[in-house]
Length: 94
Figure 1 (cartoon, rainbow, N blue to C red):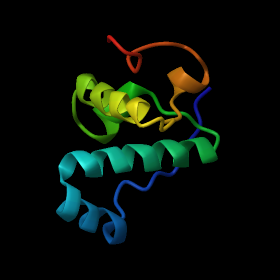
Figure 2 (cartoon, helix red, strand yellow):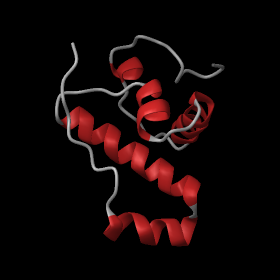
Figure 3 (tube, helix red, strand yellow):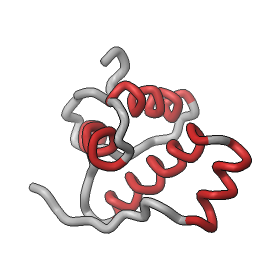
Figure 4 (tube, rainbow, N blue to C red):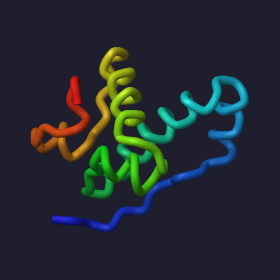
């Protein structure tokens, strides 16, 4: 079942200083964490494809690398495949 959620794609107060200090990759990872938690708080779950194709306009592999980073840091990112245990692209090796 799909639900409509409102996501904060840009937060200049928070995002611009982060980008200046830590770079684009850190900014993307920060945004991934923020929007996935926002979606969960509103009863929705995003997919890796949502992140890659609809939000960040990048490849699935880029998002998978970011998710691997989060796993290595023991940071849980709520996605449809991890919360609903559906498997998929955000699993290691894909």
